[in-house]
Structure formats: structure tokens, C-alpha cells
Length: 547
Image (cartoon, rainbow, N blue to C red):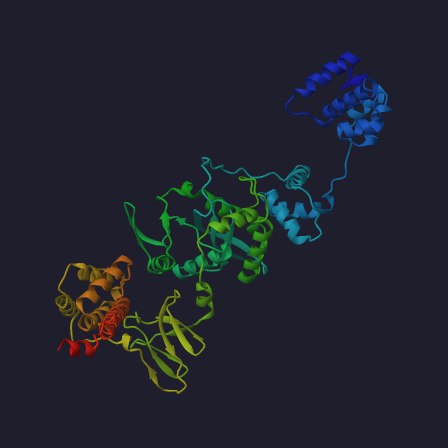
């Protein structure tokens, strides 16, 4: 018998079979030699028929019969022949070739996504099959890749579910449908454990307001907020850094406080510390954007959502060997609940210009705004009417004021809290408030916290605080200050509510105690009014006889 061009005997075949079984990788021809030996051995030595051999070896019964009735010479020619198979993806040869000619560095993963996008009837094949076919097209038409630098990263331990998300921006030039070129910008966020991604595109550079809106879009897409977020030291988020102390931009700082985000920034020139989002940005550029035509950003964003569902989050991740969407179902349970539709409010509300007198005109009426809202020419607010109430938010979506919508035109609707007493300077007002309270420094700390957290509303808070100190007694004030300090409620209105609550509770307690005391007194009086025993009475005749 001839195997691989060498004349062999049965002993040779046994030795070849034994050696092949201990090889790490086997070719198809070598696997056939092993299978042929096993079939012949089971048939001759154990006297099994073709059906039992097929069941025992897990192969088709027709293959067993072919091996049994094949002579040694026929088997040698069979395994030595180079069989040609029709490639399953040959109908898509021209499509793949055109993509590679358009961009020779296009990855097989990106080509697979384009095939699924352009051909809804694309057959179900493994990614390895697509990769082999792309390499076949490259080799046949001589379309090599350009050399690229490979960045090396250190493998780190997987983070806990819901612990961290990473954020970054990217930009890319795209070909337009009219033949021109345009640069587009995108925001990306990824959950580190599940690798569940979100991306948003626009045709202009991102601003702080845009970044804030995209954060809420991502949290809405993720259906929750992770424990912390990791960023580059981008100027959209941070103004300056000093040995780990960060000065955030107004837009992002306010948003962080409102959403109670735990934000962490990388060191300068240290992109490796957020390698997951770096890979996502690269993946978006090389897989989604490469060789794609730009029509408009709305269409691009819809295509991106479809791509995330199909490939970005729907395909097995090369590193974790898990599908991000399936992992996200687990990680979602560990995310903090995302409440509100912040970005919907920002996008659906209409913009109105703020007047110099801190008011806004809506349907021929003027509505007051807190003093300091106007910050110069071009200051805008967002207005939205809900159930007869006019909600006025700043451009970041934070509520500034709310008024009932006036049914009469030409009137000025004013909230008295938006006005302030200008007859007293701020420092004089502060000293006056402090002198009204005799006790520990808890009041001074309360005022200090108001100045720190609500610098624009110090005067209004001091005015309310002065009224509270004159209206309530010391016990009520002490309890309210302690309550607000422990719960970090730096708001004079909250202090007033706490004092009123304490007063009501104290009044209720006094009323109950008084009622209980009166009930006890009444019970005692009734007891003395009605003796518990009746004294004996002597007959008057006894005294008559005695006399």
C-alpha cells in the first residue's frame, strides 16, 4: 500500500497511525489515514458491520463502506488527490473585491458586516469562513494590506459587573454621496465587563452640552449607570488638573453633581489606562465607518444602531469570547437605576432668549427667572409646557423655574423668590442672621455650605433663614440644623420644613400627654366620688334601749 507516496505494510500503517495520534496538529489526509486504519481494524479484528462501525466512530455509514471496499492503491490515490470544492461565498466575490479595492486595509470582520447589511439573504457561515474567503480574494487579486503599527497592551483582570464604563471621542473623514468629503465626530461609551457599546455621531465638533446629552443617551441605551466613569483629560470635561485635583467645566460639573457620577480621569499621555474604549474607537473606525458613504447624520446614527445590534454588540467579542449583548443582560442588573429623560427634555424643549431683566417672553407674557440667569447677550433657556405648567430649564436641562401658564396676555408672572432685598448688603445680612442664633457653630457651618454649594442663591437662602430664626424657638432650630447637616440639605426652605415638622410633632406629643394626664385625673376623681365599700349602719333602737 502507498501512503503519502511511500510503500507500506500493515506494520508500517500501525506505526504511522501511532505517530499521527501523538501529533499536535493533523492535516485532513493524516486524519483520513487514522480513520481508515480504525475502520479496517474494527472490521477485521472485532468483526463489526458497517453500521456499528459508523456508530462507534461517529462517521457516516457510506464513508465506512467506501473505506472497506477501497483497495490499498485506490485509498492511496484518494488521499493523495487534491479535491476542489466550490466556495460557498463565491457569489459575493465581486462585492468583496470592490470593498478591498476601495480600502485595502478593510478587515474581514468589517466585510462580514457589510455583506450582512447589503445582502439580507447572506448565508449563515462562521466568521472564520468569511476570513478565509477574504484572504482568498486578497491572494487571487493581489490586494495586500498596508503595514500597520501594533500597539501592545498588558492583560489585566476583568472588572466586576457594573463597576466601570469608559468614554472617549473620535473623528473620521467620510466620503459623501455627492463625491465630496466631510469630517464627522462621534461619542463612544463602553461597559468594561460586558463590552456593551454605544456610539453617537454628529457633523460638528462636540461641545460640553453635546457631551452631556450623549451621556444620558448612553445611560438610557445601557438602562443604567455604572459605579464610575473613566475619561481622558479632555477639555470638554476638565479645565485644569493639579496633582489629582480637577477643575471641571461648568456643563460637566453640574451634570456630574445632578447625576451623582463618580468620574475618574487618566493621567496625561496615558491612553493605555483606558484601552477598552480605545479599542472601541478603533473598531468603529475600521469596522463601521471604513468604506461607508455619508448621506446625513440621522441616517448614519440609525445605521450605527443597526450595526451595534448586528455586529458591535451582537457578535462574539474577540477578547472575552462572549457576546456583549448577552453579557449586558447580566451586567444590567448591577447598574444604578437611570431615572428621567434628561436628553429628551433638552432636545424636545424649545430655546428662548433671556432678557436683561432676568425674564423670558412666552406667548405674549413675561415670566420671571432667578437673578443671575442672564449672563450676557445670547443667554438662552429651554421652555416646555406640561399640564398648564411652564417648565423653564437651563440649556443643560436643570430646572430654573416653574410658573402656571397665564391665560391673559401681556401680564408679568413673577415668583417672589426670584426677587431679593437689595437694601441690605450680603455680609450685613449674614452677620444679622448669625446674631439671631446663640449656640454652637452649626449655623455658621450651614451658611458656609450654602455659600459653597449654592453660591448664586446665598442672599435668598439667608433671607429665608432670617425669617426661620425669628419664627421658631431654639429647640426647633437646633433639631432642624442637626437634621439638615446630617442629611446634607443645604437649603433654607428645607430647614424651615424640618422646623415645622418638629413643631407639629412636639405639639402632637404635648396634646397626647395632656390628654393622658386629664384622663388619669378624671379617673382618680371618679374613684373618690364613689367609695369602693359601704360602711355598716347601726339601728337607732339600740341607742333608745341604752338610754
